[in-house]
Amino acid sequence: MSLNLVIVGAGPAGLAAAWSASQSKANVTLIDQYDQAGGQIWRGGTHAAPKRYQHLFAQQTELRYLNKTHVIGANADHLFLATPNGPQQLAFDRVILANGARELFLPFPGWTLPKVLGVGGLQALVKGGLPIAGKNVVVAGSGPLLVAVASQLKQRGAIVKAVVEQAPLGQLLRFGRSLAGYPSKIGQAAQSIAMLRNTPFYPNTWVVAAEGAGAVQQVRLSNHHSIECDYLACSWSLIANTELAQQLGCKLEHSFVLVDRGQQTSVNHIYAAGELTGIGGEDKAIVEGQIAGFAATGNYQAASQLAHKQAQARQFSQQLATSFALRPELRQLAQANTLVCRCEDVTFEQLQNQPSWRSAKLQTRCGMGVCQGRVCSSATQYLFGWGQDSVRFPIHPVSVADLVMESV
Amino acid sequence: MKQIHISINGTRYQVAEHSNLAAVLMTNAIANRRSVSGEPRMAVCGMGSCGECRVTINQQAHQLACLQQCSEGMEVQCEP
Ligand SMILES: Cc1cc2nc3c(=O)[nH]c(=O)nc-3n(C[C@H](O)[C@H](O)[C@H](O)COP(=O)(O)OP(=O)(O)OC[C@H]3O[C@@H](n4cnc5c(N)ncnc54)[C@H](O)[C@@H]3O)c2cc1C
Ligand code: FES
Image (cartoon, rainbow over all chains, first blue to last red; front, top):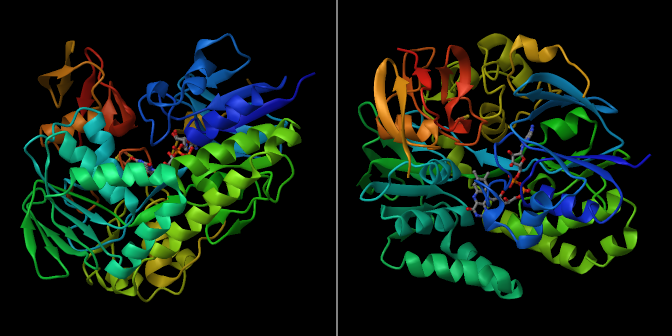
């Protein structure tokens, strides 16, 4: 019987893993919660992806693709799925986790106003048809995503009023110089920067408040500028979706899944690749995905040939983390009445004297709402240094019917 | 692009087929939901993780609008 390999996430890492695994005789199932494969960067289908990944779906391969399928939990040999046809469980021999990252949102006054949204969030909605031409947009927070998304928005006719980056200029310049070691990044960065040449860029600056009636109309910055806008796109960094890995017992290090050179986690037969193991973008996701796909199907020779690229990608990931480290001032943005938990409307004041995340949950319902702490647990970790306790099942909100599983 | 019709809170809207529902709601400045303390909320993450965009679609409550493409005849209800 051939090996039953399940890959969670059909972004660059998952697709690369599926491609490598398809070189062997494995039985591969690829799962994604979205309609179309492609993940965050090739969102909306694989036509933006390299040809070989498009062929994965076109040819008669052994690949089984389950779209619109949420992996909501796991035990030692089964994944629990919420599918359009109801709940199911799926047996596996090996799993490659490639379920990516989400944006980190930190509370500041006005962050719950309509049209204040994530940087990737606005990017996604614009790709989904939100008309942005002629709209005034402020892009703020931290990381290379700001410049990338600002330039895409401008290309679509948005008036980008400012790009606001919390990292100090010296750090950004050092990061810029380090790109020399990564030729593929230079091209992308140069294109974005050329597109933004007339756009104000404020380093060493951050949003202190969003204001408006019914929706954001103005943002105030730490440099005392106020800017009128129709949209504020703001996110502070990317954080890995580690909940599933944690449920499978995989060890984390600095909030990322710990892996060896073959992308194997601390648990035998569970591999991880892409943003899950450290934020590093497309190149890192692809090379780690490839390695995981080869390693999980016993093709160690092919995996080891990618070691150099893998080391380079991991180095870049380190560089990103230090260059865009968050400054301590951001902990002071939330005021007493600023909401921290958006699901249960719990204020900063209600939380600041709580000793732990667990106590906050019990006493204030922080983290008990629909997002199950996906937004506020990371925020409180940064604000108060709280760690999360064990990951609850299901990791995504589901209906009661989804908890009654059937085997597939 | 092919145009289709959906209904939001009982009103008919013409939208491009396959447009993202959270994007349509934001375009028309319709809040997806009310928070516990009554604030209007719209999409934030656009990727199915924050839950702010949830609406009722064809009588099914708690659907994430940011993961939904509009289809002909879709009936969307937001929290008043
Ligand atoms: C919002 C956002 C926007 C971004 N935009 C850009 C950009 O414009 N340019 C750029 O270079 N980088 C961008 N990035 C960075 C991006 O993470 C990487 O470039 C790259 O896409 C990482 O690949 P990945 O395969 O590790 O993860 P992803 O591309 O994030 O793929 C993960 C996949 O897993 C799926 N998934 C997650 N959890 C589950 C689950 N429980 N069940 C089923 N499926 C699940 C998701 O639907 C997704 O398709 C963005 C990141 C985010 C979070
Ligand atoms: S906007 Fe966050 S879940 Fe839809």
